[in-house]
Image 1 (cartoon, rainbow, N blue to C red):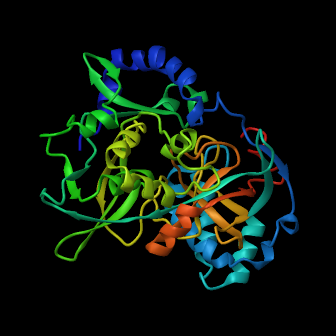
Image 2 (tube, rainbow, N blue to C red):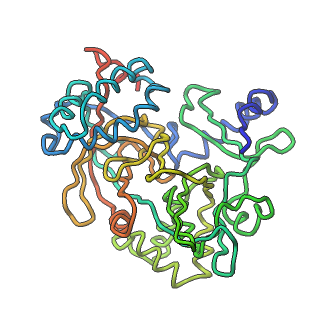
Length: 398
């Protein structure tokens, strides 16, 4: 695929357009998807590990295994305000000396090298915790009467702009579009793409048999597609068209079709299957559209670029939370059982917005889908910040 970075560096008119015209639009129009001008920064209260509920009862070695997957990214990029690359190289080297079966040593590693802080937002210390999973779809490399819903590759003319490169206070902010006559303009939305905006461009990665399944694949960001010959194609997130994400479940609640208490992924699926035409119109309410790439390996890749670990990888609001940060979760599973575990922030999502808000990755398969679809629990979390020095720098500047 075409890399837009050289174009961004060379086209001065385009850079001026982004900084002078697009940036003000982002500041006024994207508060609902989590930019720092529309929501408050988290408030932190340093605590001890003994104050964290059930801290001593977790399997910390499993959390360490997930953390080690983040190490290559941390060693290559560091973490803004929380350690440069040399710091993370040293810390990850310590982690690699611990076997992933040595739970006591793993627990001591986190206690010695991190300090916990309780997190609060505008609504207090409690927030919403949901779940996601890796879905399985039926598909084919070739279009047919059965398989006629396309899963698209990232278009070569799609330009994604990291606004933090232009203004420091916009770190984590992104917009996307395409360049027409030197100007960045919005990319076609879901409806236009559904109606053929990308046809005849040789962008079809695979064809699936269900528009609803494709829609949920977009929401989850990765999935497995079972092909007619019995092999499996794994696909992962490659970009978005840049339009705002709209939760269609909220639309069903607003219309009085499904109550807030009964809302779940399963409830949405049931309604879509019973209302094909209306369902198509409803799905188009979500103008955001996701593009995919073929993956190798046995696990989906999160926004940090690392393989996700079931029940240990967490999707967060990356505008507020650095990826790679360990996070202790205290919430409830859909069954009502307590969910108290050390997880690693390794992913993000359009609906994950706010100081106390996260999405738990449950894995793949029917059980994971059931738990993820029903997950809608209140809970709390604690960040584990790296001990950069006795003065704990980074907390005030975060």
